[in-house]
Length: 169
Image 1 (cartoon, rainbow, N blue to C red):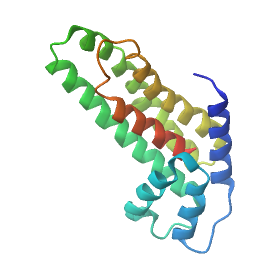
Image 2: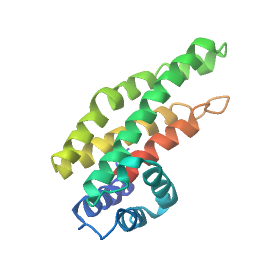
Image 3: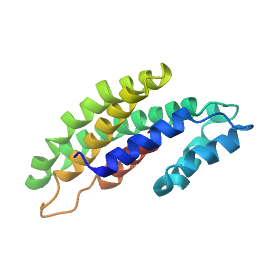
Image 4: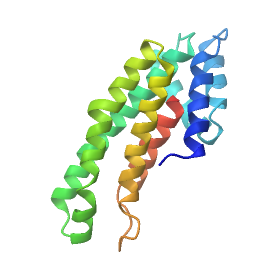
């Protein structure tokens, strides 16, 4: 899933984390979220709803908050996938769902926790690589459903997780 999109997203994370602090956390949130125009409204909504971002003066902290939200979404999606797998009687759906837990396991147990740590220690290139990998985990899960006889029942979850990773960049 390497693409120019990932390169652009990596550059956005670098700019966000490297940017200087602005006078207020609201200004910082606005400035940070403007750098991800496709998801700027989602970015603002997430950060304004998280009380930890109220007095933040460092973009790195905001990026970490969004990465933590991505980890929470990945955990929720893992639970939803397992419940759906147990409850479905559709053969094609069971078959397609079998690939996704491994992808999300990588995001939950490796990519996102390490990305959060990398953001905290200011290892930007590693954070970018790990967030890209986590975003790809969600996208790869969604790709499993291409050509399936039905619609992916977890598309919204996969998209949300991928978007949160992208915002964290």
